[in-house]
Structures are given as structure tokens and as C-alpha cells.
Image 1: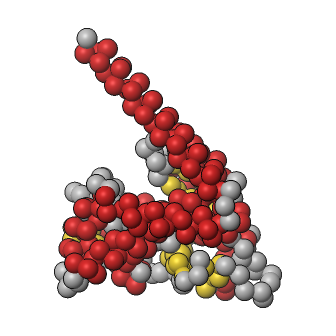
Image 2: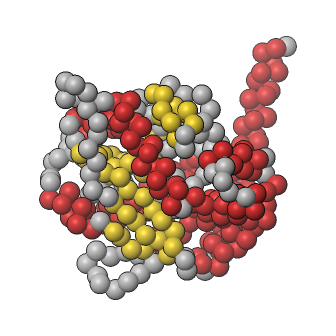
Length: 306
């Protein structure tokens, strides 16, 4: 009987995932029939109204209050509303990636997307066969970063965490692969796949702002958390340079991609990269970014769960 109930539970969960995915894909398909800007504005309006009714809203507000104890309740709610608008836009942008990304490195004509750090891309392009690591956070539309790198001839293999819903994950994976370089799901064996890319002189991109249950102990906004040590570990093993990169949403449906100069990871007394201190450095950089644009980060994530 117990086995039967377990099997039934799995099948019911699979059916729930399938129905949810059909609804999500249907809604995104309907939105794609609209002009991109209208679809994004509609999604934002809905998210701002619906967000406060979602269970994760309470977690987001709690995290914001602990990160910004000096802010009023109204200010906290404004940031949370901006966060829901950002997440809604990100979801809809998946179906418009081919239309929204209009940056052309060979043109002086301003577009929807601008890039700061073009000199870095050009420099790395000339270092043929030399591996590099880019790291970023869930800010703005971070999906634009590997697309921009590819525009400069820097194919990048990105580590990503697929959604729990396998049908939604498959849809997103197919959408992303049509617009950017290689993708490696965050699961067992992912580190080896990225290491293989670096072994061959390639480039990898990693999101570093999510909880990692087996990560090293660090702090983020003054609170203890665990952070994935993958980036400093890879940098230590391959001796490759590490570059921070992020996306910033601008008024008028525009985007700014920023690629910063390489960072100097902390070293131990024997000269090797200090993994724990390196992970903390990444957290400090991401915290700086989030403080500059708090409404563009996903505060509903259980980042501080230990």
C-alpha cells in the first residue's frame, strides 16, 4: 500500500508539472503575439498586483527588512514590487530574446542594449586558447551576457539551475540554446563539464548568488550563508582570470551590460587561491551590485538558509 501511494504521489506530481507547464507555455505563446514592449509592460503590471499575494512575498519582505533595517515599510514594499516586475519581465523576455538583443559591436548606432567593457571583450577575444571565467548574479536580464560575449567571438558555456518543473525546464533550455552558447545544468558532474571547457581553453559563466547547501561558510548582507566555491576552485586549478559581469535594467525598456576588469582573488601564504576568501569576495561584489539596484534582485530566494 505504501509503495502504491508513493507511486500515485509521483504520478500526480508529474501531472501537476505537465499542466502547469502547458499553462505557462500557452501564456508565453499568447504574449509573443504582442509587440515585445507591450507584452513586457503587461507582464509587469500583472506581477506588481499579484506579487504581494504570492507566498514567497513574505520571505522577500523579511529578507529585505534584515538587509535594510533603516528603510521604512513603504520603501521595502516598493523594492519588493520592483522585484516582481523584474522577474515578470525576465520570464517574458525568454520568448523575445531574438528581438530584444540588438547590440552590434560593429555599429555606432545606439540600440536597446548597451555594453560597458567592450575593451575587456576585445582583449579576451585576442587571447585565443586561454580560458576565462565570468561570474554574475540574478540581476536584470543576466541571459544577455553570454549572448553579448558570443557577439565578440567569445563562446561561453554557462552553468544554470533548471526549474524544478521538468517540462518548463525543457522549454527554457530549448529557448536559451537557440540564442546563446553551451549550457550545463547545475547537477552532479557539472563541475567536471566546466573543467573540460577550461581544459580546452574555453570560457565559462557561473551564477554565484544562490544558496549552495554544501558550500563554504560566508556572509551576504551581514548574514551567514553558504556559497558555491566552484569559481575560486576552478581559478585555483587552472590559474585563469576571473571577470565580474552583470546586467542593469534602464528606463524605457533598455539594458546595460557591464563587464568589469578582472579581479585578484585572495591568496593563501603558499600563493594559491584562498577558496573561502575568494567565495566571500564574490559575495561582496554581488552585494555591491544589489545595493545599487535592489529591485532587480530576487529577494524571495532562500539565500541565507544554512
